[in-house]
Image (cartoon, rainbow, N blue to C red; front, top):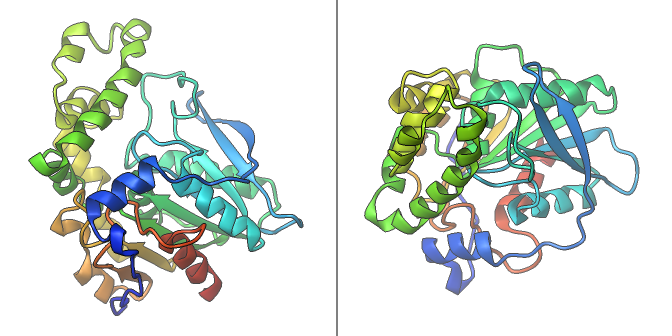
Length: 319
């Protein structure tokens, strides 16, 4: 599919990738989204909390919203999308990944970029209600990689899945990790690592046979975290094995569901491998938009809703 020419024009003060990323993450507020929580049991005895918001009239359409690293279902980049889709006749199911809903999950494992089994559990649950004929998926950052991997893996994607939108997706996890560990992103990396280690700390007492205090103290960087915890807790040999197998890049040629990937060229979290031009040109189901501006999960626009949210709705309506 030809590369989409982006129509995104940022406000003059939002051209900086840094400003766009920080403002969207820390300053944006979305009001008027009323969410109802549902807890579902997972096949491995753990749980997921889903935060639903609904249209005024009963709908047979729903969008599943997936957050990024150390996010949750109340982050503005999810509630903004939920509100826009609700206003346009589509219910929204915002997923809190394991341990991200304000309550620790039950198992040693948690969530990661390639945990498509959890997305599959959410989809199966929604289908089992019999309410929805059309299901869309919108993933942000880590959630974007997960969404793309899900529809590109060797599985029969349910016929109810009509479209996927991936925003700021680290399609190449190793490349993205290298970017996060670079000097320009040091402040972000420190913030992410602090949150991840705080969440991991209680597991030292819960699962002393799986991780020791020495293991915990050895974690100095994000890649250390993935070596010590992410990889071992989720069945990978090490961080590099995790990055290789969980990256969605390798699955893009197999995508058969209309999918839109929006990655900004000034996103400092993304490496060159996160801009899959060759894959998009070869797959008629993969639409790639690479705005010059937008930062990481930025895409600020004047008004209540941001560019990527409006573009997601436009894409869904075009299918």
